[in-house]
Amino acid sequence: MAAKQHCAPAGALMTFPRRTTGHVIAIVAASALLVGVTTGAPAQTTPTLRRGMLVLAQDKARVTLTVEIADTPESREVGLMNRPSLPDDAGMLFVFESTSHWAFWMKNTLVPLSVGFIDEQWKIVDIQDMRVGPNPETGRLDIYEAAKPSRYALEVNQGLFARRGIGVGAKVIPAFKLK
Image (tube, rainbow, N blue to C red):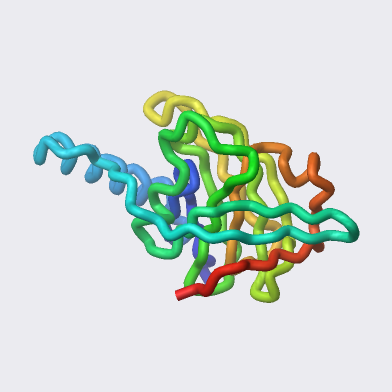
């Protein structure tokens, strides 16, 4: 069975069967570029995102973050692309329609990030540091795939989880309602 792989350019998300990922990415990228050139419009626009607060809790550590909520295909596709910085008490929460082995890439992402993959019980099941990728026109992008199935993903400044005493097993407590 072909598992789904979701690649997030700079937090952006795309769904492809694994065996065709490279071909589909090239087709989608070329199409987006072509549409942007032929219409005179930018190929990627930043959607308006809902905001919320969440708390990360593990042992005695408590971290409160303001997050943007990427809960549509369009918002997940753009993610944190082309942002020059991210406040230390901020992040982006990706909300997926189903639990899967989600994966991210750092296309057009200017800030090194850490991603926490979160299961349906709002527990962090994996954390990975993601480096700023090369120019997507000239370099291959690394793929950061969750070690375990997840329903949510939280991107923050690289190293924030470790600096604040948050690791695998931490509880995520959202202070907002999902759609």
